[in-house]
Image 1 (tube, helix red, strand yellow):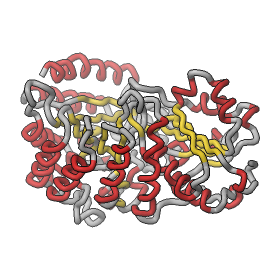
Image 2 (cartoon, rainbow, N blue to C red):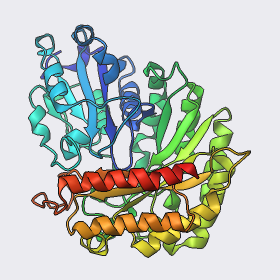
Image 3 (tube, rainbow, N blue to C red):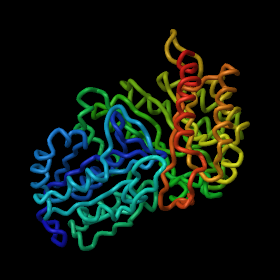
Image 4 (cartoon, rainbow, N blue to C red):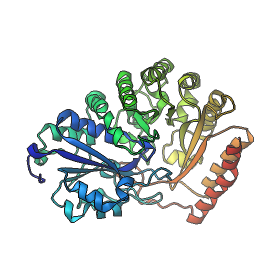
Length: 462
């Protein structure tokens, strides 16, 4: 097959998972993002006779030459990639721009069409915290197509057209959440190709909605989620069908992490107000439903929660927390995107909560979730994400952040973990790419080390 040829001879597509890390999606082992599942499902739905071969970049690294020989027998190569939230990973290493360029430029692959999909293609190639993302065009060549739309929609449409690459719509996106529901369930069996599946060490990231409720005011300056517009909530039954399909394929660990704020999933005010009121009855049905369709699950955790929601709707949030605890597994984390406790930074970047609101959210989550079962881990604690390099920062920012954390220790409050990151400037956000932090590099690292040495140690002791 050539880049302009018909799909009549297309038999094999290779999906290479270079791993992703976005504000609302984690796809670095042991976590598996929705991307491979959705894409495989789209192809199998629209072109049932096409083989889909899935590989992780860590598996590829075991022998680049062997991987290239395998790929040379394929009709289409797809790289899923995009670390646009800086992080440290224990279970895998995301692909680098240099690695992607060298690997996919191999002469044996020159005649095989190559697509780049995921956050790199859509928002730019994040390298590391504190640096601006590079344009995805840096990877063209070797990639023939940079998919700026939703990969499952683009690949599904391509497969449905008879694989006519001349007609590919690179910016095609979902119009409605249920556009992809058949893809989601059909793609579940791709999990069996993941190396962690055989070890029963695979955690599937589950999407409940896309977009941020705070799109109404623009959301946080640096974040990609508001760019999706009004949040698209998936139907509860569709999410449960996905979890059931994954459970049928042997998955025993799930993280309900792909959304800006899990506590607002199912809210009737979504799209109408910046901080929708949580719907505890809906969350109760959701989590009890998960237990019903996945009776053998071993891990059920959550991720993103907006502290501003808890501060504004404490009663409903408390009820949501209690509903989750009835059905989840202990050791769970409600990740709070605090970003900064400096009032100047909060205002300049339209962050989601001030220090008083964050404190009230942490207190509420401690009240609900710090209990332990039989001396084990606390049920559900907040996690704190701090982000540095934002407009409005000064050395006072370090004082505000450290002082707040010290107050948590003094108040005998618990947090599960503290993530300290530096911002990546991405296209499609309001983050000023010309901004340079007033915090010197050595000041940042000294500050981070002090938090690790004092706050983290005390929280772990508790």
